Length: 171
Image 1 (spheres, one colour):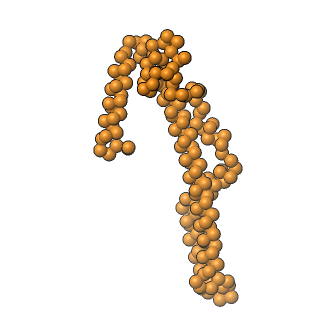
Image 2 (spheres, one colour):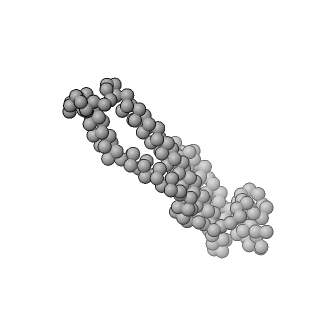
């Protein structure tokens, strides 16, 4: 049982709308730092995908491709020498290589996006756990100093509802 005669715990139990001696079925309160949770799940493949995606999203990547395409086209239109032509217009080999590069780059981008989504989930979990701890501490401190916790909770709920209904709010 949660309360053990603690009035603040009784109030916390009541806040979730169900007096059952539980804190919303949360089994633990130990917060694992988000960066440790994140680093422990990264694999070598994830690190490689993140590095490739980071480079592909840089201006150096663009500059290298501009130079590469300029050299390729120059060689194959005979600007340097007619004997150097190896991919005649409309540059089928270049098209195939660029298409393959696009396939691999899009895959790396998706892998990186999945990793970022996992990191966001991890951060959200860490924030949630910290918020729960703050709630418990706040209610206990408020109880000790004689605050009307139910009144404060009602004000908080009203403020949250108003913020959700404001034009331009993030909901």
